Image 1 (tube, each protein chain N blue to C red):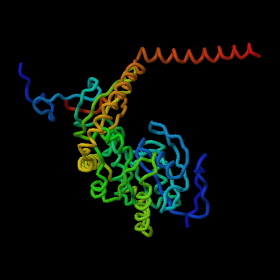
Image 2: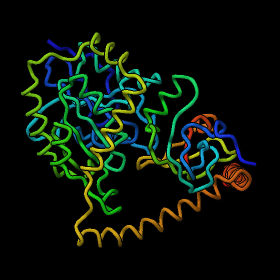
Image 3: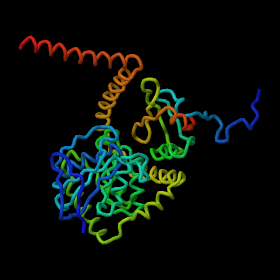
Image 4: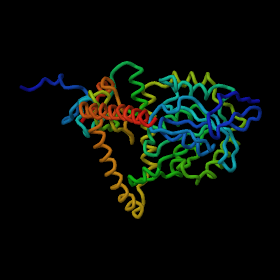
Length: 91
Length: 290
């Protein structure tokens, strides 16, 4: 069945897969498309460099998969799982 | 007239300075950018530096001993991501920058060459506030192993600020640094210092759109200021890069095991048991000897 057009998220460009940071496989990369969540945590993530268009790579998970470690702008950063979930990306 | 009643630093070269007031230089930068290593190099102190954020949680004051042309007091500060603080230790640094008695005459911003866009974010904020600035770029040796270098002249033009790339563990370039500091200090000497009121306005203007725009600019700055190494240099770099990638593979492998949910915990418990048992065995042996 063909999906009605309004079901496709607005930012989606043909062939792109939209996801969140916590869904990445190790060493998989994504590009930030936005951040959800409350203002203070959004701001903290932005100031750490997770601005729209930034390339982020998932490096590894720590025990119990929280926090998760990402490589971004020449460094590695650990994010709590719920923070990682709030960062929207495209693959 | 400034008088300083700073919490006195610990061992080494950190000394209490009371009546006289040579210019105050503040080392400011993101976590893990090399502030304390540079502080030790400038003052001859021996503060231990460790490789994680939050290592420095209060400010330390020392007299510069290794800056040939610029005698000053040096203040080390906790790592800071933004001028709008998000944690108590960041608030300490920000408050110090605006306290009248301790307001720095020159701010020395320390940035890691490998993460310029992130570390220049704070630089740009300080510049917008109007602090007299000198930028020190550290860890260029690591960047060179990746086949890139920092074009200091270009970076200095782009940021409109003196830029010195140096390794605080070596003493070269300290003369360049002290000359730059002296120039900036003389030029800004009688100027107004940023006030708390200006800061409040700055903090309330800093919205998410503003942050995004700042990073866009910094991405361009980084792109323009980083150059590939010359062919001769890059061959060397490639050689040591191979070396490095094999060590980082090793380190990643070790992380994979030591941070594994089951094996990691087992190895942790085993090593704790080993230490515990060793203490008792050693204690028993000592008892028998007595």
